[in-house]
Image (tube, rainbow, N blue to C red; front, side):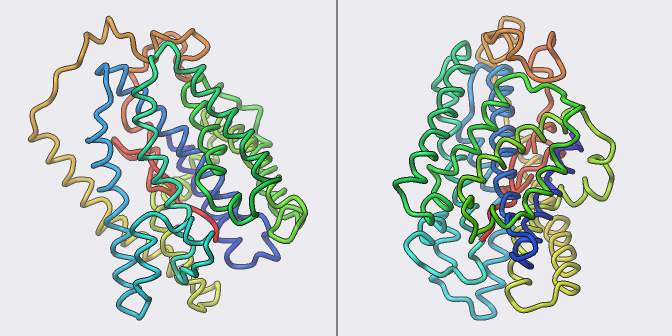
Length: 368
C-alpha cells in the first residue's frame, strides 16, 4: 500500500528535523513512535496472514528474512564508520542490538546513537512471532488487546517510577507504541478518510516545546503520538492521493537507509543544505546497491527451495480471518479471507520494512 510508504516518509522527515534542530522541532522524535506503530501493524498483518495461509508461522524463515533485510545496510554503515575512526565500543552495542540499554547505562554511542531504536525493533522481531504462534487464532484479538493495554499501563507506571532515560529508550516502555500497532493489525482497521487531520495534527503538535526533551510533557506526549499514529494509519488505509505521491512513496521505500545515514551526516558537522542531499544519495545507493540486490538474491534462493505443504487446506483454515469475528477481519475486505493478502502489503521503515516491498515488513528508527 503506497500510502503507508508515504506515511513512513513523513516519519523520517520528522526525525530528520528533530536531529537538525531540536529547538525548532522539539518533538520530532515522535517520528520514531510512528515507526514503532507502523512496524507493529505491518509485522502482525504479515504473521497473521501466514498463519491463515499455512496454519503455522515459519519462525526460522522470519528471522532469516529480517536479518537479510536489516543487517547488510547496517554492516555497511558500521564498516564505513570504523574506517573513519569510530570506536568498536560504539559499534558493538549497535550490531548486538542492545544500544538502547547501553544508552540507559550512559554509554555514548557517538554517530550510532540513533541505533537505540533499532534495538527496540529487533527485540520485537525476536519475540512477537513466538507469541503470535502460541495464541490460538480465535483468541488473538483479545490476547493482543490485553497485551496492548498492559503495555500502555506499564508505560504510565514507568513514567512515575523509572528514570526518563529508561522510559525513552527501553524496549518495555516503547512496547506501548508497537503493541498499539499490533492490535490495529489484528483488528479490522477502518479506512478512515475523514481522519485527514491526523497527519497535520502530528506535524503541528511536534512543534510545541511542551512535548520536547525539556518540556513537562516529554514522556506523556508519547501517548499523543501513539494515538495520532494509529489514527494516521487508518487514514492511510483510505489511500489518500497525497500520501501516494511518487516522491513520498520513494522516500518511504528507502527510509531505512535514510534513518541509518541521516544522523551520521548531521552529527559529523555537515550543514543542512549538504546533509540532506548526502543522506538521500547515500540511502538511495544503499537501497539499489545493497538492500535490493540482497532481497532479489533471497527471493531467487527461496524459489529454488522446496515449498512446504500447508498444515491444512486454506478453505478449511482456522486462521486469522476465519477465527475472528467479522469486525476483526483485515481492513478493506470484510468478506474476504486474509489469505488473499499478498506479502507486498507489508513492508520497510525504521526497522527496514516497506509496505511496498514484496514479502517484507519493517522501520527507520529512533530519535537520539
